[in-house]
Image (tube, rainbow, N blue to C red; front, side, top):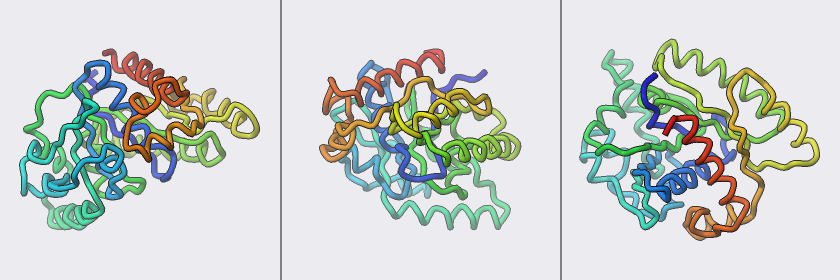
Length: 255
């Protein structure tokens, strides 16, 4: 089994905590002394906004070969390096489609663009909610994925779709891609969501993190403050949950 260091945070459904997880997991890992790069591969650019870094030069220029990758990477006061993006990243889809239609190799576009990166311990990729060629090059580059989701009926349905999608990705794009697990976010231990939570954690279709991220207002306030939760409010449930996720993540990757 190859070393797991490049992790895509992905789910086709938006608003399930992908960026929150990418931002806070990367910060928790950096806080423990790991060298971490967060790649914002979502044209919405929310991870870039969360870390409050400049958006130019960006991932788009790196993918197009207009700037070297380390010219775009920015350091932050939280110990995480960030490769930023904004809405202009959306045009890369046309570039990749054109390459594919012309018979040119495109799956290794991200890998080639980042070949001069220094030796980070972990590279966390915040992914767009939709698929397309951009997700193809992320799946080709990544070693594993984490799938944030809500404990609801759609989450169970999405898990089934993701299992089918992973099988297809392994067959056509990256045979070594692993799934570290589904991650329940906005967790509630009562009501109908509690029932769906137990169903998700008990199923054997895809692995799940035993750690869940509880609904916590401090996580929202941290976004508004442009700080990861481990800096914004160390005593909050949000920080305790993401620290527990970092612990479980490190166990899963054997670090």
